[in-house]
Length: 66
Image (cartoon, rainbow, N blue to C red):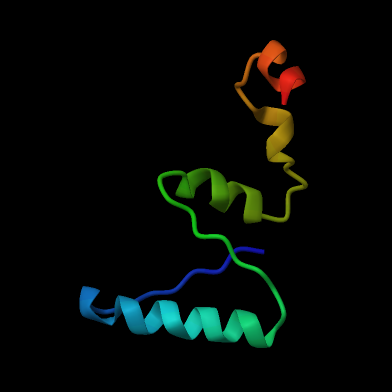
């Protein structure tokens, strides 16, 4: 699931963030903010069956050590 919000001014952002947090808590879902990779998060939220872990550009040696 992907949650987005639109604000007319930057001054409203704290109120928008608080509203989303309150609605998520009431719906019993956990949300994680996306910083710097909004395009990937958007693609993951589309109903295409995209599994991001299958498209990582992490070398196999490092991935195996995790």
